[in-house]
Length: 340
Ligand SMILES: [Zn+2]
Image 1 (cartoon, rainbow, N blue to C red):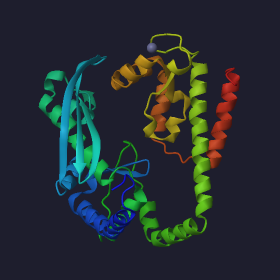
Image 2: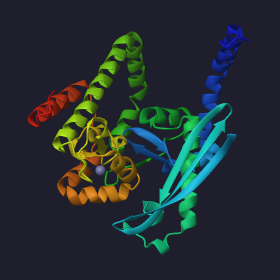
Image 3: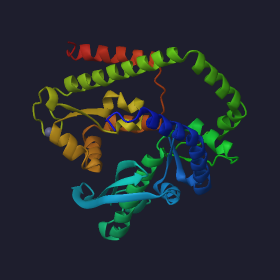
């Protein structure tokens, strides 16, 4: 057979896959609903995430193979004192799908390393539990990746739970200090099928327009990514804010204090970015996140307080909001003298 493969065989395989896809999805959903409870789900930025424990329960019903597992223990010292983290890595396979997964757990992490919001003394932390937690996170990540359980949009998840004739379990919010908005969700539930039908219709009739809008949104997003990096470089005077080294072009890393994944509000907030050299960005800031954030808090207390506030906010960045922010950042870049 040539490299392209026999088209008839390929077509037969595709048709078989298409035929089984809905049944596979239904079976997977039934497993999800029967094996998870509300506590297993966390909502973050409108997406539902399954906990490692929930993922492991689901994963037990699938024939998932783990191989090339390796781990290492990294020790570090930060302002709290000595600490360590376990890093687990593996490859995992389900049928012909293979994924790479990682799990990291440190002696500073909240569940095992803290008590009443205070860091435990290192001797009080059970090292075996830290190691097991890292391993369990790795497995959970592998399962979520193989079964496509990462970041399910909240609406889709609720509809899935309803399809299964099950009350959608109340998921916990990722952000502390925020009350669950029980009322509006409950009120919207009755309208949902109608809303879904209408949006579906719009999607079909104006598909290309929607796609064009999506393209415009990501174009504006890329522009914002570029602008925020330029503003950061000019503001921080092209110097690594940790070691003071003068940086040129690609050596200059625009690092985020709170991760970009925490939301678009933080991704494009210039108070959340800082200029670092390669080593200080990758090895220090990413390698020792607790120490990095404490250093930032000590150096820029006001900016850090502002970031803590932003963390609890959720922003929708539609086209208009993106254009407004672009104008703000362009003005800022001009003020800093960095306009090309
Ligand atoms: Zn540096």
